[in-house]
Image 1: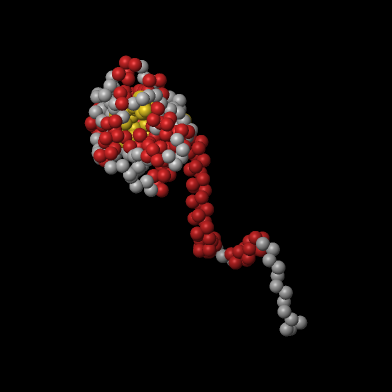
Image 2: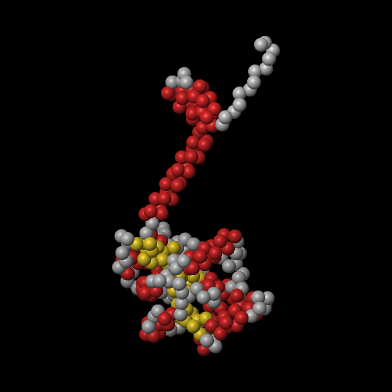
Length: 283
């Protein structure tokens, strides 16, 4: 009857939405339907396509990812071509890169002076990678090397290199004092000396960093010296690439490495004067 209100049809969800869209496009040409679709759905469509592409890339990477046959971190290095170095070392060490991957990270940076959120995240990432046995060799500036070596990141080089091999680096060996570390570990968390011991390199001046680096060359001044690193300032690699300009680079082998023999080979590689390291600098 005229004047009576027609009851509003109850919404039944997506099915009704589809029917409404079908009615609107029923009499349209294919070209008009495409234009209609693009006008109303272009944003979610693009987002959906992007999500599919991203997911496909992730799945592809997971399926095609190779296990590492060597992994080195060259923290805070400058202007190095990681691909060129990885390929060069793979050939030098006769690594099988058909089934495995040699990866030398020359891009990661970490500052102990400003220590931003980025630096904090980088430090946590390094810890996580060490815990999962990713790292084999590490080349770090001396400030970061101090922080990681007193935390147990570096292996005692006497367990990897022979007495003769280690003696070849006499004068360039980085020692830590295990007795001093043990005292700091056993001290109360608010002990000022222990706090100073662990935070020594945070916001340190260049003069402090240089003096500390010199201290670690003198085992005779330590109670329980342990060789955990090699200063590589005079190596052909550093001399030809100048990749640690203004820093003091130190080589170490990760205590969690499962390929310590290859890490030792990497040290020999860095000292091989016949290799054209200068060609591995980004132009």
